[in-house]
Every structure is written in structure tokens, then in C-alpha cells.
Length: 251
Image 1 (cartoon, one colour):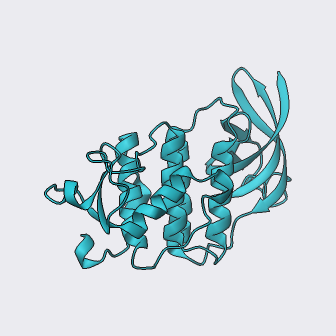
Image 2 (spheres, rainbow, N blue to C red):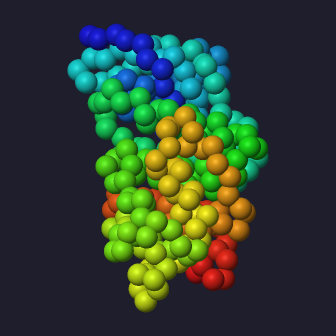
């Protein structure tokens, strides 16, 4: 039997038995752990708060025969400030769905937990629009999975930037106004291209450190959402509940 302690974020909860929970914990050094929390549904249980969705804790586990059990959950932070916003709650659930379907069960890569914690932090605050947070999550996750788009210049002629550019979500390639004008690719403003470059190429500590005009946010989101879905070859149920309008010339 192995016992260990690791910090992690609860990204899914289900119930079992009369008062138990099963939790999926995104950890810093052991990837995604599915564990039983005995009696955690009881309001007097010491595990009740720490095994709730969007709770970040220091967890103590023991593992026996490849089955994990939570023995302690010391709460470090609870992400609840976005619960008054349907869009933010749904976006947070979308982040969890992406992680659950793609996170390795055994990895010492801390990036995934850092991305989740930072994304939830900005969703809880008012500093950044939820659409911007969603786009950063999608592009950085795609890059970490090995699907970094080529955004340095036009893939055909090498032009660095034009007022309008075109992006191929299937191949992850950028084209200038001249090379892309007769294609069926979506047109995107230069401001959106600059935002994508910042997300992809900046240090992780600065990937959220930019602003974008409100009318450009839905365009950026359409690109990043579609690109991640194409890269992973997956669709996500939670996206069906998110609605945002595109400007007429960007549809």
C-alpha cells in the first residue's frame, strides 16, 4: 500500500454508495487521479468541503491494488466567485471536460494544474473577460499537447502581417490578405492575430497579460475553439451551452 500527499484540484465529482464520493483530482506531480472519498457526502465529514468541485487542496491518498482513496483534504482555495455567471461556470466545466478527456493519468508535468488554476483565477475575477480566458486556455492547451500553430508569418509568402489575415484551423497555418483572399478560410483582424501570437509565444506567466477589443473577442474565440477541437479531434458537450455573437463580417 502506497501513501502520499500532493496538491490538486477537483475537476469532477460523482456519488456512490449511501454517503461516498468519487473524485477526479488534477494533481501537480501525478497527473489525474480518480479516488474514493468515504463518507464525503456527509456534511460533518472532514472530507466534505475538500472533495467538492473546483476545490484546490493538499490531498493525502493511499493506493492499494491500483485503487486510490482520499484520507485527507486540506483546502487551499475554493473557486466559487464565478457561480453567479452562467457563462463562467459553463466555461470552467468546459475546462474540466477538456482535462478529463486528454490528461494523462500518470505524469509529473505541472503545466496542466497551473493552467487550470490560472484560468479559474481569472474567471473568478473581473480583470479579464471570460472569452479571453477561454481562448488562452484553448491555445496553450493545444500547444502543450503538441499542436502549436504556425503564426510567425504567412505560410505561403512569408509576409509578417497585413490588415486582415486568414487562419487555417485544420492545419494551424496563417496566410496574409493576398494569399488567403480567394480561399474559404475565415478572415481575422490583425489584432486577433497579435493576440494569438501573444498567447502562443509568450512565457506562461504572461500569457493572460493582454487586452483585446470587445468586438474582437468572439472572433478570437471562434478560432481557438475550433482549432482545439480540430487538433484533438474531439467535440465537447459543454460548448453547446455557450453562446456568443460574431460580427457580421466575421461569420
